[in-house]
Image 1 (tube, one colour):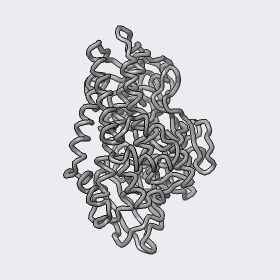
Image 2 (cartoon, one colour):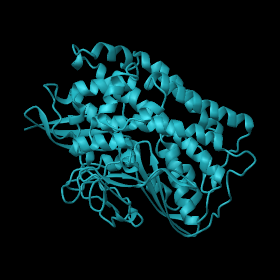
Image 3 (cartoon, helix red, strand yellow):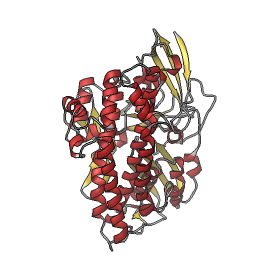
Image 4 (cartoon, helix red, strand yellow):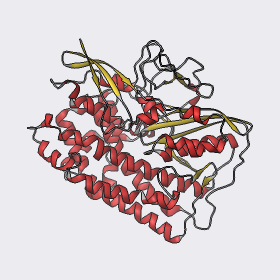
Length: 483
């Protein structure tokens, strides 16, 4: 048995190290480490409650709307107010723009460039992948960055700026739009849909959204979608057998995404990929284990927990805590959202492999991209001119509030306690904290640590592409993890 230390990882937001025990040229066990501590939860304590809306989004520059939405939701729960209907629609549209930009960036800038590695030279698909997806030099990057820039114009109209806008408030959003701006929003959403149809799927969105089985997906990739980047990924994934790489069989959890008056656009719940069973989400069953985290022991319930670093703690190896749902790890992200929501293709792929894997995580991300892009156009059209976007909320309530939202990378929760108008306690569990959790007190590994076991190195050691594929399939954001 030999041990390899992999990291720092490029194309990942923040610091990440992975320790791998190697046996027979494959990963026998893994430990993932978040080596950077930042302290946002401590910074917030003692400040006026509304400061959460300004400080918490600074945790991250690529999902700041998600952090804003969670902070606003926690304050809204504490205040007991309802958002203005226009504010709900505007917030969903802005959140969708950020999440779609994240999915697009992950696919083209973070994940696909690994197929252009020299390790794959000689494969039948390698030269085409190198020309299309190689970092900086590939033809796709310029097209994608232009589409991403256009998409994020939504943030300029609805939030004034991106990232770190103060437009997202407990009572809605602060930027009303006029007729011209509404027309701009509809046009931007339509342009992005056309980009997806022309470049990613080479078919109307209804075609990939209508796929129900793995066999239909294969026929689409050889037929209507053959010239698109989604099909290119699927063909490479089949050649590399990515369906049998990075496998894990934990519960898949979603808090529910894009809530409106009629409920959530993507449902909340927990899906068991082994039993193919769906159950309601009980957020009261969430706990944070710190047995292997550089943190002092304390209450495990997020609303009671505290964050006190302890760098000399025996057996600790990460600044990430270990979130558990009913005492078990849970995987979060697009695959979890679509499995919980009941998407037939994602559920069929999960059933075939009896759990998640590299292939289905990426497929789910692109299918969700199509779903949200289609909905975003409708949300832009639904904005009601001359109706309020925000209601005034009180600022001096005492009590507790929980804000649960879905960022692109998965379930994000803020637990806020307030006393005499000041923040008494603040706890955050980010998506990557769920996926990249260290072991718990029972020695149970987190989802990524499980998924890395069995990854073949094929003589490439720490530079093996398989390890990169597994890590990137979760789209990690380590600055959010350690916050």
